[in-house]
Image (cartoon, rainbow, N blue to C red; front, top):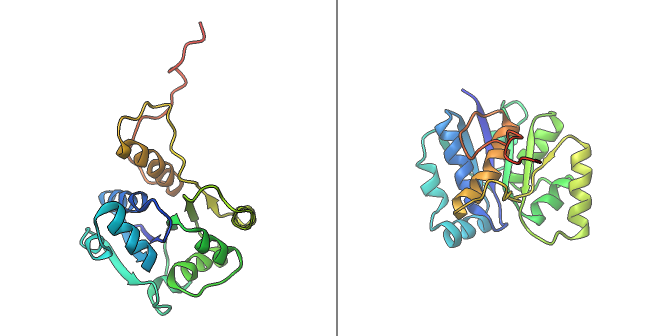
Length: 192
């Protein structure tokens, strides 16, 4: 079974992380989930959920963000992908500086050192220069920087459509088949 580490940190946009975990579960992935204290606050405020609610999803194992001895902290634990969604500016800054003081940042640095797929989904805007510099640096290391910027060319009707647009891009990066949204065919616009 494929497996992923998913961390939900303190940026607004917890619904992106929730939807990602749901979709990975539906696709048969095992998910080692990490939720920071601020991520838990946003889960409650934005989704009326707790990390314990997410632990009830099939294939999901929750880890305490303070536990640096948990499985995602080790490079010997094999995962197909690591995703921080949403990624707070503080989390981005720490990873870019090589600081691994919690399980979210430690697992990201494990992905970097082991040359594994790491996807960061920043949502905060505008982005301060130090975070932009950190993202540019990490991109040069092979980290996928995938801002939570939904597209509008598919004429979204609901907030869920906008969330699904971003989650679909994450799943594409992970190689997960899905049916979220329509794919562009090139035939949507006639130039005649």
